[in-house]
Every structure is written in structure tokens, then in C-alpha cells.
Image 1 (tube, rainbow, N blue to C red):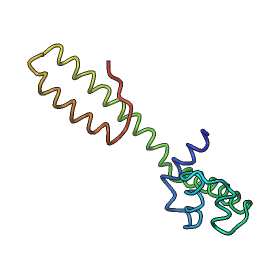
Image 2 (image 1 turned 60 degrees about the horizontal axis):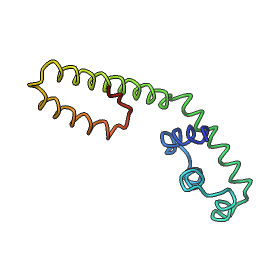
Image 3 (image 1 turned 45 degrees about the horizontal axis):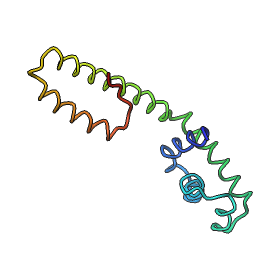
Image 4 (image 1 turned 45 degrees about the vertical axis):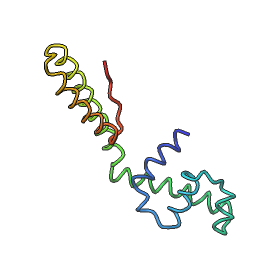
Length: 127
């Protein structure tokens, strides 16, 4: 399962670099949860061909990521974003406590930040 999630992340990043057939087979297997047999029947090939294709695609995607490094870069950016957003939330809460007259403005700021957070989807730690 963990390998599948890693593969899906790589697939999201690098699937445009695969051939149309490779994209279709990997999409059917991982995103539509079809079995090797179902894909083989739909594509008119053997189960072994589908299995070979999936194995080859995994290797290709790993190779692309080794060379390009987008997965690592995105993970690092996500961690940094999460840390910054957490700090902003903590600062907002401390500022509200010290300056209650700013509560309205800070609540508006928090709403805007929540909107950004929903788009980006990182973890924000609230105290």
C-alpha cells in the first residue's frame, strides 16, 4: 500500500512522460482499481503484458524522479509551508491575546489563511 501511494505521487508528477498506453494501463490499475485480468481483457493483451507494463512504469517513474527530484522538492516545500502557516496561526493567537482590539482584523486574516490552506492542503497546527 505504501509503495502504491508513492507510485501514485510519482504518477501524478511524471505520467505525462509515459506513453499513452502506459498512462492508460497505470491509470486503470491505480486510479480505477481494475485487476490485471480486467485491464488485459479491456486492452486485448495478456495479464503478463499488463504486469510487465506496470513494473516498467514503476522503474521509469523512479528514474524520472531520481533525475528531476520533483517529489523531494514538493515534500520539502510542503513541510516549509506547513511550518510557516503554523507560525502565522500561533502569532495570530498571541496577538489577539495581547491586543484584543485587533481581533476583527486578525479573524479576517485567519479566514484568508484558511482559504489558502484549503487550496494547498497542508497540516496547520493550532494551539
